[in-house]
Image (cartoon, rainbow, N blue to C red; front, side):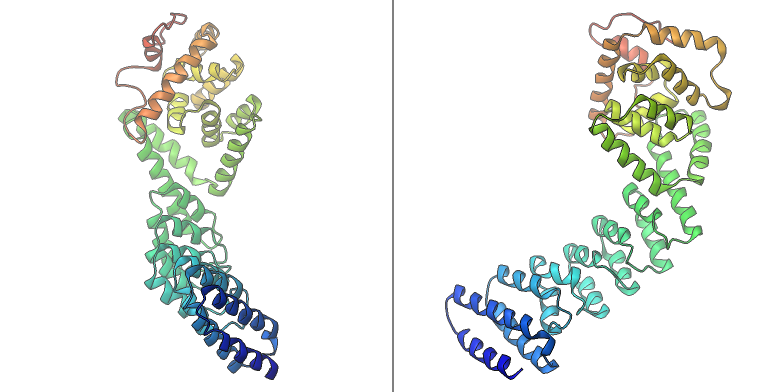
Length: 387
């Protein structure tokens, strides 16, 4: 290492240059030399290199320090005092070492997580592995983007208390609930609570859309559905449906298969991506609105009358639809023109867009979808109003 030390002293002498470009060049030369000789360096050598790189880097602008951080983040024998200072710097500088440097200890990460902001926490949350004490601080201080990142990190260790706290914070965040539900280290008792919270969230979304009697019936359906809810499978399935719809590959047969398999949440989501309505409106039309509501969705999607009937049977559960109503439903569906169905669908899209997160009923009180259809300007009277 004598040659390296001699070169280092010569390079350090050049650092007295007043030009920023020259000093940046000196930093590059010191860093290059550090990389080339790292395997042969003693602890004292590493310390000396670190002192020189730190002094020059902190006389330069942020960009120079960010470049140094990027290069040094992959070196296991990097100077710890330098890495720690870089980790506490502006996030542009800190990000590489926070995400990747193995020089940082758990104590270092806890200290940074306790004192820095959300961007630093987010970078720490992306590390390949996180010890439970570090994860505890991230969950305690993190906001939703940070919580989602650390929850998706399968290399992060969680204590059971930390998972309980995370589940509490995820109560009103569907994406975070789903990510939490896919972790392998969640105890069965907590998983039950998470799924109960999914059910509670579904109920909250539906509140105000149905009568008290309807909600009592839906409560039972939701509780039963969430008992065996596969959160990861549901998320992956919905992502797949979204992708296939964007490529115009989502077919009527797939809708039928989902409905026949009683995969109701995915059936709703598939109809949602096909029609452009939100899931809440599709769920309302599929489960509780007048017959014409489901007919309009099916006709606007170009579905055969047999598909409409099958979805209607799904909506009515094991009891099915009474035989006397089948002929009438089919007659009304055949009478509905595609043009009028599309016109009403546009009306519903406008309503969905205008209401946003409003929790009121999808349709005005005492007004079914068929009446809404007839109130559209120029809408022909091609179907009778369902009772």
